[in-house]
Length: 162
Image 1 (spheres, rainbow, N blue to C red):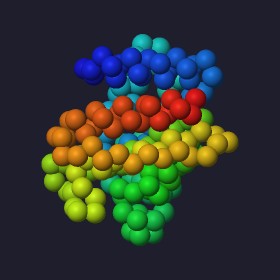
Image 2: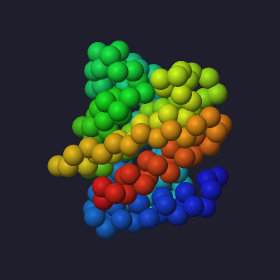
Image 3: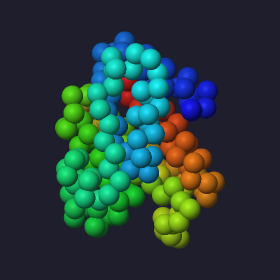
Image 4: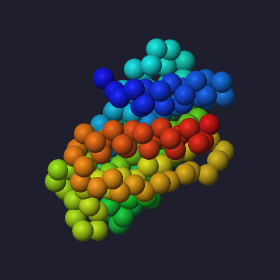
């Protein structure tokens, strides 16, 4: 279902989290659950994976992850601040110590000059540590490719926190 390099990356993330005795949660907007799907494609993932939040609407970000509505209104749902709050909220609302959050514009529509198609914000959080963030501008490479590249970026950032 997923390309082999992504599967290998997911295996490494899960193995290292297992060794570190850390559980993982995801908070996904533009990927719609693909990161969690990728992690759970690996046999034995239940030893590490806690839960995933698919928060496609602004209301779901508020209800499930405690992202303030004012923050979304001020910064936009595709922003560093919202990604960081999503990661923090995922840890607060789960039994995990590690979280990765993604929000972006996968296309084909929805982009603007300020927030073009392919813009993705990725944040990763670990209890007791600073939240990490990356902004990616994948470009208008097609919806599927933006989503797969987002999965790769998310797992790479998450791995750095283990």
